[in-house]
Image (cartoon, rainbow, N blue to C red; front, side, top):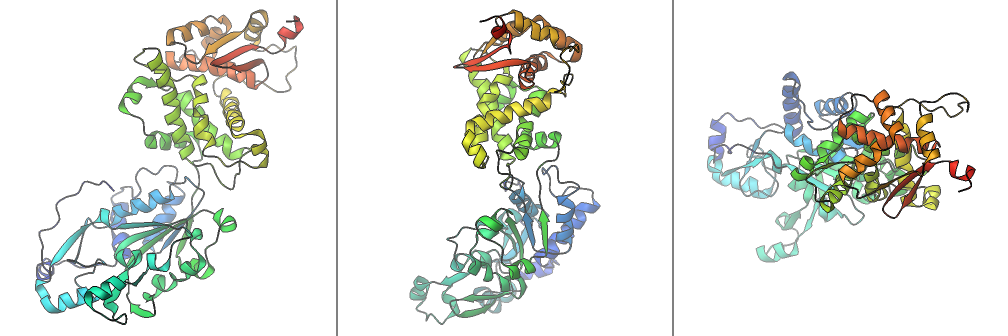
Length: 492
């Protein structure tokens, strides 16, 4: 909501507002008409939301054109709240209200007793204040402790005492969040977590505008655009949306995760909180960025991960931040001014992954760290054929393979150790010392730049391990790659 905005109109009274020709509109008409203008001008209504161009956004725009209240239904990390917040951009930049009103009273159609009496007393001299659209978004996370008083209102004994009024006087009412969001967008996140009796209290607000507060039947035809978000997991685990409330929500729209690596990368790179020095000094080759996203794709299909819970897009975002920080730490320890991400740095993303995935029983038995490492290795295996010839599982042992020379190099030698904190020059020298590795790169990735080349060299080694052509062992501060069976054959 940090939008830069112009100065508010100079209009200060109701009379000046009438003279200006201003015509008030219900909020849902306001959103509809501004959306129509956006569509006709070929401008995006939900900028910065990727992967929904042909699925969610058209349905969302259709719902807004229909002036519906909306429920965004999807797993965690699918930009539901983000889209709700972006709806603010479809409001008029400035909205007039009766100055001093608690519920954004329209000067032309005041609702509260305060505003009605002010307009009746002052007429055209009624003071008008202006509200920027960034202040017209209200948001409430549904939790079990939310009460009707929080959302709708309650009798305020302090106000009654100060004004010396009876509790029977409607001026002692303290308005809750929903009346205070009059003429605004009101978003309730995780709606199923709201107790059923609280959901019931929303019925009339959505339809008739009646508000019941401690026995008062206050007729407040509130003007609201409701947006709800919900996770389908909540329907069975913690709560549900009561049927009459679902019936009053005009459109339910299903969200989803990115369907391809390119879209996932775009989201991650947009949302990751990298500093300027990190962006400048830590280089990520495209294969490294793709591999990072592949981890989330693998997690969403893994038998160790609870698919009903989902794997949030925040997994890749925080993993990217950790990955860059891992390389940055090595760079600082080596006194270097820049470096590039290596495949070994991916061990640094494990804390980001383990904190974002829910494991099923089999995953719990394996352990969160082991599952995260497994996901990284599966991502390597899936990415391998993007850059190198496929290794067939049932390949005959006598059929020549492009990897024979490399496997033989490890069979004849003592293997290769890559320490986590090797300087860039030492890291390059070690990989270059494996001659067959360089030949494979020249044959299959001849156009790769220096950073991409060395990342792919390490990916090739990890890929051969994943396909059981080499072995990999983690020691305290690095990895050792060796032949799979040669040491046993030689009796070592």
